[in-house]
Image (tube, rainbow, N blue to C red; front, side, top):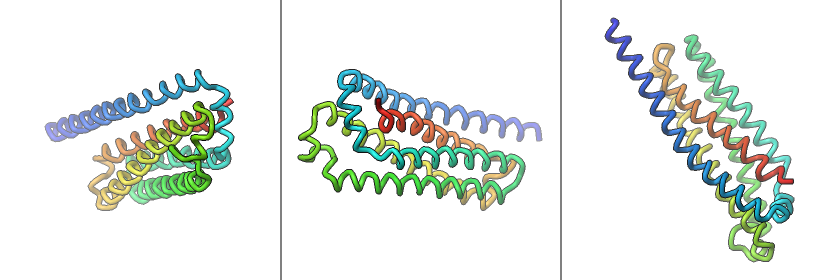
Length: 203
């Protein structure tokens, strides 16, 4: 029995370390983009301020609230599985996935409107604006697009975990997969908390 417990503890610790290393590479990726944004904004502060007027603050704020709520439901799912409450763990995961999809739907309609108005990289409408505004939109599409891919990946991962919890392969005694999936989700939310003011609240 002691050998089994030690093995389980070792697997749990290894999975946790592996996830933190992966999250570190994600932080490096977005950190580089944040640094690039800071350099370009320092060079063109007025143009960045003008460009942000084309974005929808209400949609950006609603997406922020959606992701903050999703972090709460993700955390509740981990808390529930630790207590052996399978139903509430599934509920937390399910609501988190629904909120992730709501975020993506909002972002889809926002991008659709921008593109419909000709505001996309290489478009005549955008190239007619200043160089700084073009840089702003280039960063906007790159960073929010990359973040959107992470939201989609996080939602897909949580769907897989949902199946595992439902089949009790993830349970009160073995829940590292759910915990790690939620750690990834918290990082996705944290990145958006930085993206939101950078693009929607430029002063």
